[in-house]
Length: 386
Picture 1 (cartoon, rainbow, N blue to C red):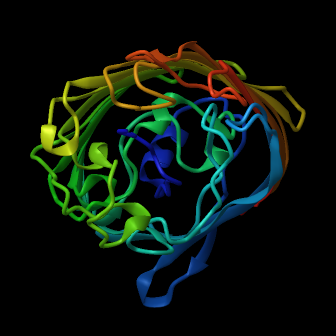
Picture 2 (cartoon, rainbow, N blue to C red):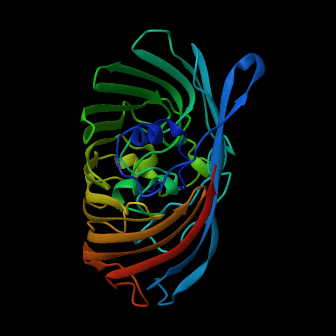
Picture 3 (cartoon, rainbow, N blue to C red):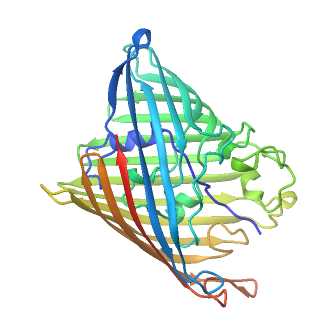
């Protein structure tokens, strides 16, 4: 069975910072950098965070309910953001984001990528008084609104849109800014495959302080092949059922950020497509459509905010992009949040209902029968940001 899955994604602060730059009402305030004297390197900024959570998941395939506790993310970042030569290094473990409808949360690990605990590490050249920058090294994905670091999202719980996206890759990236428009292009080994044929692009248009449009693309320029290495599998080339990591898939998407006072609303739509490739077990073209509306509201003069989202997803063909082949589902998440300076706590509750769970005469789903249509997940999350 073909599975498209985003595994425990570490995100350098490239994409996250572009979101935080918007004049938006965020569910939480992200880490505030600590400036230090780097001697001959100049001024440096240190930031990071750590969180953990307890969880409850209902209607697992054996009919049981699961509960437990996990470390979410523990990341430290060192940056030099001034001068012609700049750099970013981010080290730690990441795995706090949980996709609704996919069962028990995965354990956090520092070994999900070929670089081990190095989740981001790149050098940036920023010529003085020029509208462009060039970066090279371990870079973050340009895809989508949701961050791979849970405390940047309206909820710890993530959507189908996030689930099917690429994450960290090694490559080069260029950004050009002209007034309210910024364009970034990245070329590398998408999915951490060590095969360099993956192109990403993101164009952002800041209309005004309250409105921002982002359009993105990601896709393979050539056939990756089964010699790829990806995430925690190292150099193992005998693994089966991993076709989508090596296929020639193409993705387009867009999200729009609207801010009014303490309210921020972000609708997003995304479509990903993979053509027929018999050698990878893809006997017919397959695709996934995802749509969601994210929102968060900060209560004025209080440490409280409320975040969440609603989503719809539809898969076509045999590929199990999400829960199963030809799946159709609707989901939700809601996350009341408390934050006092560097401390935060958040209650996350979400569910996914399968509108269609049948393909080619077979039925899949949740619960003891394996055909149930609803799964609920709840977490109690707490952390420290600095």
